[in-house]
Image (cartoon, rainbow, N blue to C red; front, side):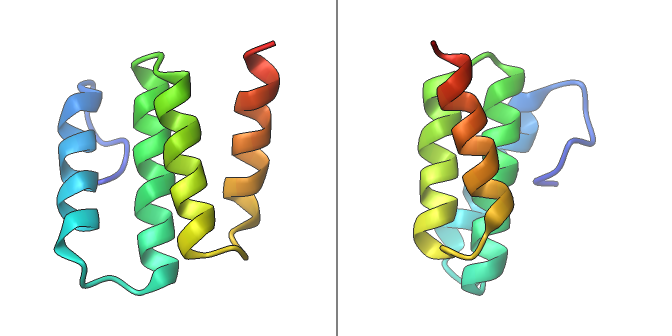
Length: 79
């Protein structure tokens, strides 16, 4: 599943990417999938990848306030 259900973030990342690539989700659900992907990338200490995933979440659903907040926090953590 594309949520934190395992100790291995790689499994969650793969699940999120499958959902994203299928192209069947609504913009709201696609944004959530990107946000979940970002969370998993952070578990692997991939801050730049997480920022990119949050940016995609915002791109498909600019009303996703949580993605905006989380992306800002990751930018701030890079300083």
